[in-house]
Image 1 (tube, rainbow, N blue to C red):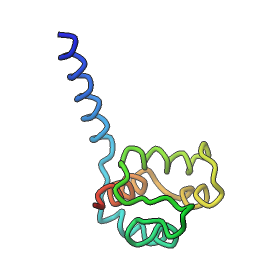
Image 2 (cartoon, one colour):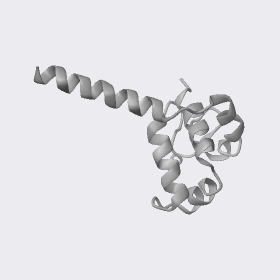
Image 3 (spheres, rainbow, N blue to C red):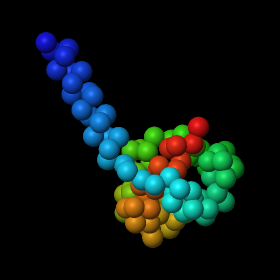
Image 4 (cartoon, rainbow, N blue to C red):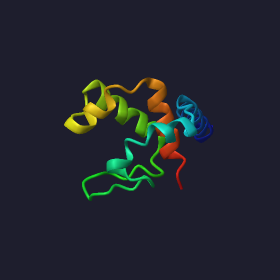
Length: 101
């Protein structure tokens, strides 16, 4: 019984996490044009210090972009890039990069 409850909790958490990000990948692709300068058109960082975004988990990307935007995660370039993004922009970018295979 305990295993069943834990499994139910795990499935519920995954469902909530997946539905928490409901971005539009096509809108994210349009918004990502400026991101390509560092992260590449294919989502692969152009320099070893630039992270790859291709296939990144959407929930993680949303969390990190919002942290850059709000200043709780510090990086002068990314703080400036994320500052003007709306929550919808963030969701769309996460859907775009998360959907790349």
